[in-house]
Amino acid sequence: MQKLHQIAFKIGREIVFILMSDIVLLKAENIYCTVYLANGQCILASNTLKDILEKLPAKLFFKPHRSYVINTNYVERYIKSDLLLYLKNIKEPIPVSRNLKSEFEKVVL
Image 1 (cartoon, rainbow, N blue to C red):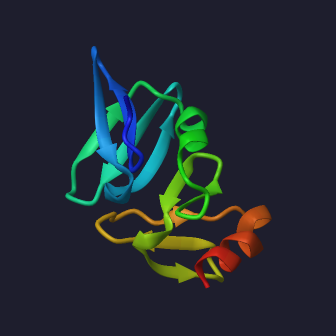
Image 2 (tube, rainbow, N blue to C red):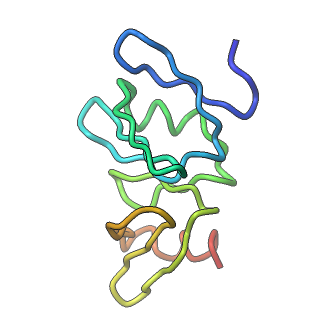
């Protein structure tokens, strides 16, 4: 049974439960998803981004681009002119879709 603040990920033959608050970023990798955690770990899960997003609370997680879901608590910087955002513990910038720009700004500002 899954606990309220955890989410289950399929990793190989295991199911691993991770606290939602520990998830910084989810990145789509075809039928897999890379999960970036606050402690710096990355996990390749056998779940699709769509399946994971359905289980996450909308008030905490946002999909700024078709391949990414972010935990809004980890947003460190947003460059409006370039439509790029930076997350704590993640080196690469995350793109924000032009179509989602205003919605993203409502969520984080």
